Image 1: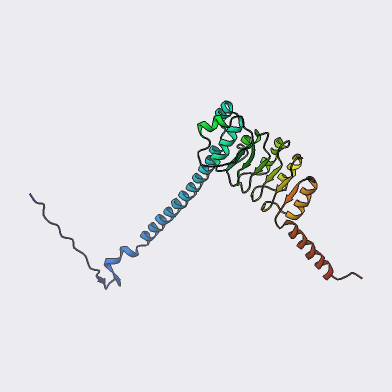
Image 2 (image 1 turned 180 degrees about the vertical axis):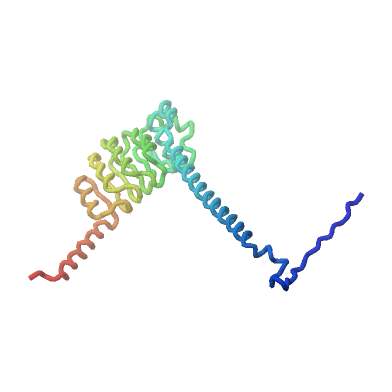
Length: 258
């Protein structure tokens, strides 16, 4: 049995001469309807912005967790194969490069060392590490501090290396000769002051440190702190010279008191 068809009737708006309005559109201009829609829109915007804040907080937590996982300790590898293999495996998984003693540079493949390389390099000291741009933090620095023969270390543009990290580098004072901290956004004058323990340092790059308030003066102080070290700071001395010239010009243009 077929159900009967129903027709849809559209009611045309009719002008009401008594009220002077269009009867068919009375609901469209209902004040209560406008307020109801306003509340609905406000609730939508509130939920929307709450969701955005929640998403931002979630992404921040995820990023922090990711950095923490990248700096986890390879305890099993260190106990079984020694600190050299554990340190090299950590740096290579971070995307950096290592140089074993009397060997060529070993660049990152994203997987660390292979099983055969674990046995091959377990007794070979690491003399250089290039960790430029790696996500090394205070915790992950443990893998590098165990490399007692390390002579060259590059932490260039590492976003999580801060003043607290520099306070731990004194453990490499007997071997470390070259250190690059260029472009690290969290290093300030307080962290650089901790480098006075590195008495064996011969080359130090501290250029492009945005957290350093007075680069020129800081470079001079670091040079006095490490007299046997070549301190590199691109444009720092020039900036200090320009500042002194501007100060002398201001002094010359000021009126002389009678």
